[in-house]
Amino acid sequence: MAHSQGVGKVLLTGTVSDSHTWNLVFLELFVEELGHQVVNLGPCVPDDLLVRRCRIEAPDLVVVSSVNGHGYVDGLSAVTRLRAEPELAGVPMVIGGKLGLDGRDEADRAARLRAAGFDAVFDDGDLLAFQRFLADLPAGASTMVGRPA
Image 1 (tube, rainbow, N blue to C red):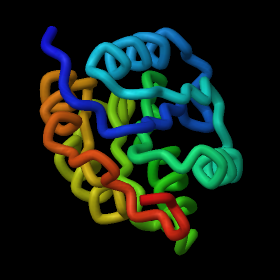
Image 2: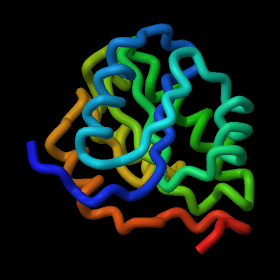
Image 3: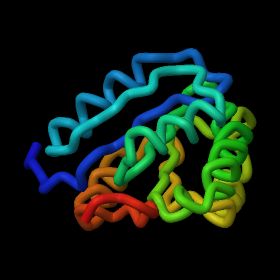
């Protein structure tokens, strides 16, 4: 796999209801192999903890991963909470994995997640699309207030 120029710091997180870890370990290794620094918050991350760690870590990208099928509901909550914080509103944020349980309305769910504030949605873990997204994201993409240039 070819290395890309890293965007900087990627904050990786599971959703509040998802206790799976293998997806997070795999994504951490995948993103690091592409040349990015990764901070992995692990599974079952409440929205307030995600916001707090975004303030501390100042990530250039937030990646939310879910495999339990509740990614849509949990993702809406997380992105809404993060986008409500003025200093975090410009941080690029993506979600991927198993976003629903019923196998229907994937396009509608993805559209609603983007409308809520996600920059990209990778339903069913489309790694090639995610890799392209990372490659196209400029270094220092985040526009957090008070971040060093």
